Image (cartoon, rainbow, N blue to C red):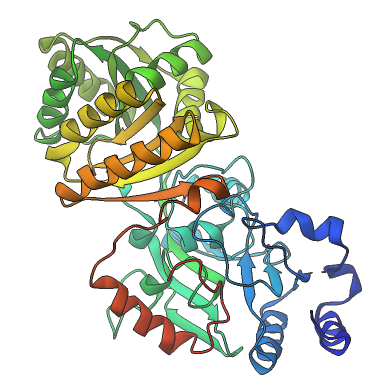
Length: 443
């Protein structure tokens, strides 16, 4: 229980209107049953710094938070005295359009950031889930989230060139710069990508940008078998085509997307989504080659453009949260591209054996799969354990992105990270020696 004097001091930093103390308000910050005692909405970086100075002095556990779209990620927190929301850090600091560079505070939503950049026909080349639900720039960095277009553009690490952090002791750290070609010293900003708010609070970031592509098309095609589908994937990846996205959909997901988007697609088949964004002439030429390669392996499909294309990719990015029921478990697996058929085949076998309905979307160029499951808890637990063991045999990894607390209590969220755990603990100890930031969420 926080002392009244501490609550008063925290309240004085941000003001009463930007402080939540009532239980009904704090319930919205529930993380696996752990509810903070106070939620603060600082209005500038200096206020974040002052809060952390006090938290450090009083040994208060602190949960940094953006819009809360990824609260389910990670282990149950060991403790949560304070939540620091970046909601009010919502200013776009600078957009140097001529340099293709922009700086923004961490509480700006990705959607609003893109809208501002689009005024200059530019964009941040990231397409993670939850953009429509208000996913923030800081949250995307902290979770290292990405979407299907990582094939063409990469992940947030490729665009992040500068970062401002409030550290656990309240000190402010700046790394990187506002220019793209910056090679002096260690690239410290990259350390915070995917750190889940355990090393510091991201308050400002600088990105390199891309011009908005002129035109796009998507080819949605189904195949007689998984093997045929993967053969096409390997042919496309080894070609000189510049694809924006390449997504394998398992039969369950393919069927659901076909129904929800009114698409003419064969039932119970593995499907491939091939997206190309560029100038119109280049897109047309490349899509003609894509269709030829697919047709040679028995693929049947159609070109999708315009609003229907946008809606389809939006559904693919967000399928675990749009298609599967609320009592779901969402996994993220990573294997070598050449091992994708083995993993998808193993999922099919385990699903049939356990009675668990499984939806899978696989980034075919990176080997990353997003997996959602529906079924009895006990069946899901057994299937996840078996799938993790199989993926480990392929020298891959599997983590739980979202699951009910009952399932999290039976399966380790992160799995075995091997010798990396020792290094991560040392880094955590150096950056947050008192374990104040998101304690227990990661390591």
